[in-house]
Image (cartoon, rainbow, N blue to C red; front, top):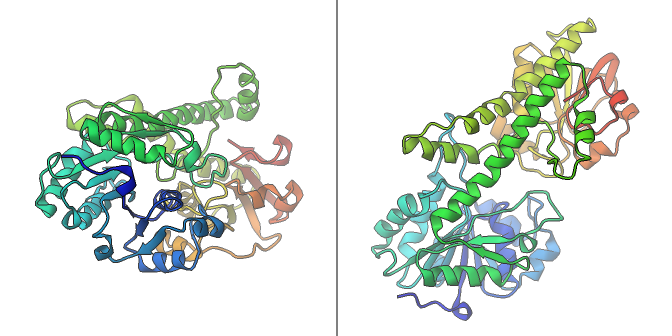
Length: 427
């Protein structure tokens, strides 16, 4: 029987990354919350008021007076509501990797008591919460689902680096395993989400809603990327076309580019995996994914062709890549597709230097084996690629960026931060 009321809620947030920390902070402003992460160094940094993701500043951390941090699962025993916000990436063969999600379920299973609620926020395919996670909770707790404990699903909608759309100002989709659990989950989130909530009729509906949000964006960007390839062959500036088309009220303002990150480049594979498991082979979704995944190779080939056209020797050339993170003004390196450009250029025998004021050098080396330049020498490069539109790069004018290149060089502006006449290439 469902018994928790809002006033008696003691929350544990499992996973303190880009999603979990803002959530823990928001709840911690009004009620007791324990933020848990298996990384002890992450916990120490947060206890010192430092957030390496830059999603939460020290003032917000201090405002969450009811929030404390730990890496010891034993400290979660008194909690009765567990919110799991761990990453759900894909494997090398582009299949869902539920390792962290199932591991978090195994961690909290032994802590569950009759009447407790487990809420999942991680992106999954429809059915994963009840078909994959709940059996782990039952096995590790010895309790019965929907009799002894209950489950909710409320997909995260955090947009890393976006200071305008923050957690409280984004409508939250909620759901629960019983009508009473659904009401509780919805009321709980409504206490911190000023934009309001949307209670889905089932957990599977909420899971599906999340996974199609980024699938839709992925397909729209794939269309624009394909248009960019076509227009480049026609020697038509894609940005000029998009600006002209954008004067119509219902034209959607997508832009071409590298599609990475922990959501858009990942979530479609969760949906296609489930679709194939039930006997349907998706065509449009996978076609869009293939095209977006090929853009790194396309960018590298365009640069090499322009270098050859200008009689710049490619093998042994030095190329500066400005930006490594998956998006601007964000330190997140997960699934960045800038790496595809770098690897492809290295296949041509190019020596690539990388400068990114937002990326963590240790993380870049550990994750990708790449070293970052702290300072960029002038006049050293045969080509320069503006790969990420960080504000630090936007603050530079064309002359300052061209100054990184040798007398004869190619400037490829992937993000169109410069005027058409100021760059040699752009998507």
